Length: 460
Image (cartoon, rainbow, N blue to C red; front, side, top):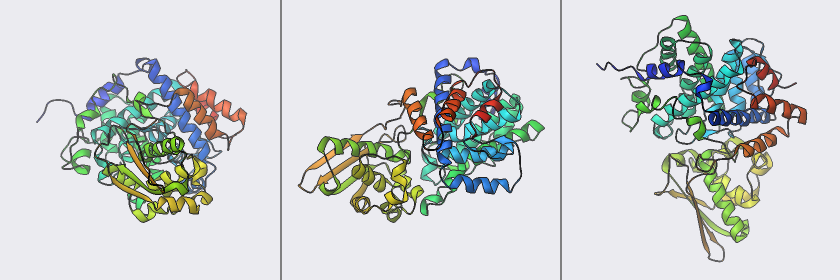
């Protein structure tokens, strides 16, 4: 038997020894802008029906006074975390750690907010908890080496639960023994299936919020003295040996570089409100459209090359991808994204409206999309896209985006994030609300009450 500490204990030892001052200023600044993106998207989501459905369901489970992003709803802390996760992730426009293939903010932020408000903590503790939640979730996703998706698991749900347990535990003041136990406990709660891809159901929207409430629950149990398996990551029946048996995995990455290498800085902000696997294709099509002045009538056929693992997500089942059943289906349809971007010269939230989904010109173009394997893809280090368009006059036009825009190697700047935030807020909030939220988020890390931050980011 090995005498070295378990991975969960290694994580706990590092996390309990860190203070916000140990986080580099540049990482803190990027973290604030990731939070800004997430909060803006939560507000934007309030224009859609799914948050009301979630709020109604959660309201039947109890009451509370915890504010919820972008709304006037008040819930108990764990239920508020669920709804906040739904709001941040519901439009699938939120950030992604590329290598981990994990939406990191959508669970880490709700967990940190609820833990900080419940503990009467300051925004210093909130920001630190959020960053540590992102760091751990990203590492769990990285350790899976891209295999979670291939087997039908959503790493945002799995990795997010572990990150949330660390975020909530650190904010709540757990010691190293308790924080290690919290990770052990949450391992039995972490879950998320990709079966929603078969029928466009809403379960994925629930994954990050559920991960956040699992993290809060696990931290509370651990603080009270509940035990959890020490080898929850690397053990015989730990995460990687149960979920990814027989696959190449790297459990050691869960703790490697924690506190010295900052994955928060590697987190990508999305330029398009669709699955990240389709972004490079949208940019490739826009490049060809602009360079060759292409219009739908010019196109005879379209060929797209994608790595098989992301291909399962955005290209299968083919019938649903050629003609999406609803806007959520459309977000995960490579043919629809390619056809819409080519036809309209853009892809915004407006391209997910009911009218846009039924546009004959777009649906006809989507039918012309053929998908083939991409032997040159950079996946999972980046989400590559190659597009070949054959025109009706016989031209063959190609373009490759090897590294998707928004990736750490091609990041959206902080100024870009502010612009995206203002665009998210514009349809649902007045200027004074937008400025109030902007000021609250960009002052995270100051010695101010976390509740004041949460109130500033609610409606009203």
